[in-house]
Length: 149
Image (cartoon, rainbow, N blue to C red):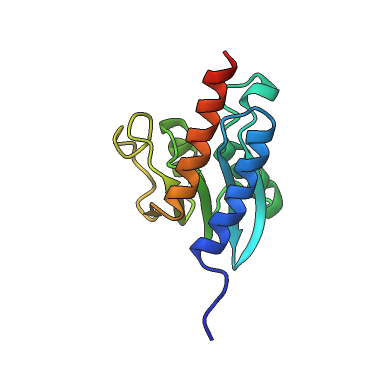
């Protein structure tokens, strides 16, 4: 029998977090961290609410997962995030030694791929999972933001 807990399933959970960020007026990026098909951390951007440029969804998720696991390394964990991690988040993910990163939309300008940020050698990365949904949410956010100003 096929495992229902695939990358699409968990990316939908990350998109739910992104929707929460959207409702709060935050850039709609959401993340979940999974180990053995179990979500151990849920997070979304909180940079506006916390007045903290480091409060990206990935950073919040890394901290929550480390607290859950009782250690700083996220071995055997997968991060699902709706937008390709930035350089800062990729650096934190490097140090966490996370096993896998799955992202939705690419970030051509600020993403870790074009900026050539190194990930841990054991970290695998997969992109484009529910890319259209993630991209549409971001576009909707910025269109609404422009229309308010």
